[in-house]
Amino acid sequence: MARSAALIPIFALTLALPLAAPPAMAQRPPVPAAAAIAAPSNFADLVAQVGPAVVRVAVVGHQDVQQEVPPELRGTPLEELFRRYGQRPQGPQAERQRRTMGQGSGFIIDPAGFVVTNNHVVGEADRVTVELSDGRQLPARVVGADPKTDIALLKIEAGNQLPTVPWGNSDTLRVGEPVLAMGNPFGLGGSATAGIVSARGRHIGAGPYDDFIQTDASINPGNSGGPLFNSQGEVVGVNTAIFSPSGGNIGIGFAVPSNLTHRVVESLKQSGKVDRGWLGVSLQPIDRELAAALGLEEPKGAMIAGVEPGSPAARGGLRAGDVVTEIDGHPIRAPRDLAGTIGDSKPGATIAVTVQREGKPTLHRVALGEAPDRKASAQGAAQPGRAGSLGLALRPNPEGEGAAVMQVAPGSIAETRGLQPGDIILHAGDRAVNTPSDVAAAVEAARKAGRPAVAIQLQRGEASSFIALPLNGERDPG
Image (cartoon, rainbow, N blue to C red; front, side, top):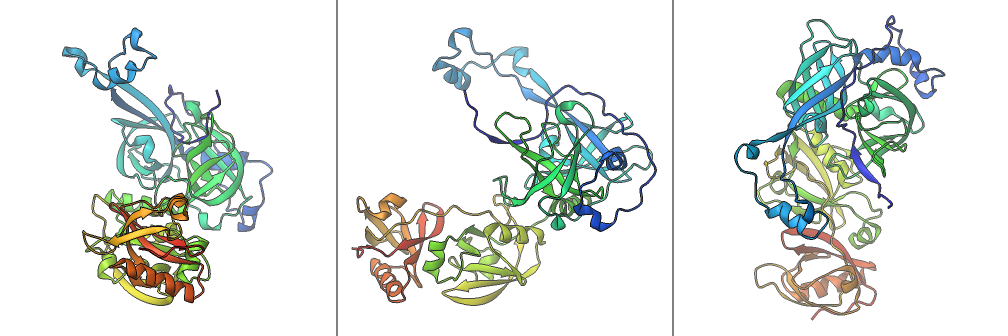
């Protein structure tokens, strides 16, 4: 039976094996910057240089013991019912827990014993142990962890100054540049694999700060948290996930860029957590159809689909329908650019936000806040609704502002693209909607302006998004 490919955090649940220590060698002189684009003919010196700072991270946790399904129910429709509602164990058996063991990788970034790894390696652990390249096994304390970037910082007490590896500049990486991955694949011990940078800026759906380096250097379960080096021996990434139909390496691995990791680690070292600015908006990308409906020359920027009441965005005058094009003069091409920029800012910082509003640029100064627990700071892209032509019957919204969709004409673009009775149109073209006639007026204005579509703000339940309604073949709303 064929298996579908999946993104897999590369954390191994295996038996522990000793980490092989690389041979000692004298400190090598700095490599000229120009050599960073040339693949070494031999990686042995590089492995010997950085290997002492690469560690194995072993974790011990626990798992509640599930009641065993009776043999006669296995494989039958009753198996799932039994798992959900079956009788729970009583007496001493009810207190039983299964001990779990797992392992990943890490690297030392401070001689005092600070170790970087992945959050998913240590996030549920009861006990964490770091094994050094010289064979010493030391208990580790979790200084802090950041699930949004999957980075964690550990601290060990070795009684002496430890070897370290330096941070590199991941922004200067080029596709095709040679890289070296090191870690503890499948619990086998210290291993090194080489490859190239396959791509940059990969978005794999891991969270609002997706910006992964893709590499074909062989990484596998157990490599989680291990370093990705450039040819100068600098850490340019933290190996985090693989794309694989089998669970093993097929040449598609992902690493968190070092520039992002370094910022997170410094924050964890100082306070044990990451303080991120919060804007209080939901975002959606802009496609060509929506760009045309908004009068934009190109489908670039981050559209504000909704603004949370009382949020920094609301206090700063931002509105749903604004298209953010710059933050502090830096271009915003997509929602993740905005999420990353806000996430890199501190609560209380004031930022200059340039938006396109009704075809004109406006500048707003916004003092960022601290994200409430229930919200993700600088929320990721809200999925836009599906749009269609105006094969709609509308009525005033009995619960407040907007026009409510009563019916969707069979066979219309509205039906094929998913508009539903009960949807609320809050904004159309350049005007707020209070009655169905406002939608009709916006359609007529867009037609006279020669636009192929009209942009509307659609609310469905608690979600809000902007969509482009094509004007070809539209019907006048009733």
